[in-house]
Amino acid sequence: MSLLPFMTSSTELVRMRNALVLGETAGVDLNWTPAQVPAGFLAERGPASPLFAEQAQRLGLRSLPSDWDRVLVISRHLLGSHAVLYGGAVQSNLDTTYRQIVDEGKGYCGDFVRVFTGLALASGMSVRPWAFSFDGFGGDGHIFLEVWNRELKRWQLVDIFNNYYFVDAQGTILSALEFRQALKTAPASLQLKPLFAGARPGYVIEAKAWNYYERGVNQWYAVWGNNVFSYDRAVLGHQLTQLSRSLEQLNAIAQGLYPPLLLLDDAGSREEAAAMWRLHLHLRVVAGLGALCLFGCAWCMFKHKQTVKYAS
Image (cartoon, rainbow, N blue to C red; front, side):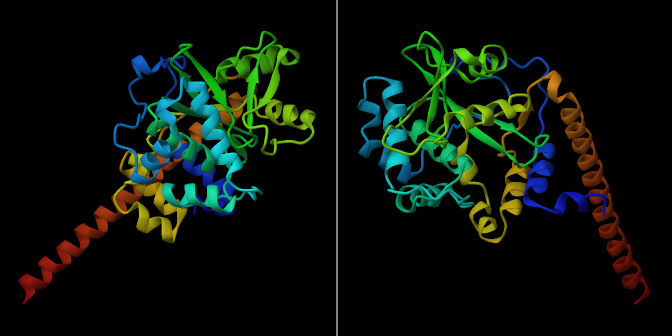
């Protein structure tokens, strides 16, 4: 009953899921590099799916001269493969999500990030996701990613769904944390650029794009993993996807395949972050009580069977 308020909408269900997978940020270096992946980050260790390996080869990603060239080719492939992009969450496995983006113009920001991540990993690149929220770390928000540029030895932000990357006054492509800091302290120094000029921008009116990013600047969090292929191979994952996205995600959480979320410390969202940690504790208590109830029911059934056996 205590969880019923979170069952009222999809955004509240996302809030409950996010609270369930909160991770501790104390002592975590958010400026890590692929040479030293931090403990707890769910880095993809398995092979790419056959479809993604095939597409990476077809696009010639590994033969391109630089990682930024790979970013641009992947972006053009995803943003320009279909004449019109209709949006809307696909809510399916990775291969189906890829096909619906490319063949049907479907997909929302999370879908584009997952597919971009898969193609980047299949081409040998390192990727990590970031997100921000407008509603206290619930379901109203946005997700994007960074790629590690091996030539420049730096992270570079790629907002694939909105068809943007960001540069400073000197033309340097910014990392996610650099972009966020500049957005808070020197927004006039920022410029947004299209990843693929032939596709629609996230916002036709640029001022609306800046307003969008500024509204979410205090509620950023790191998605602590890029294991899109391992997640897709979760036991019962495909079957549960057909029934419920929530059940599929709970299954991945139970198997340790759902990346933790690390809330960035920000004075503007301390209250919202504290509320999420309270919900996190609440969910742990509910889970513990549920486990005790199940154990109690099993014990009662066992004792009942023993009583019947001895009585007979």
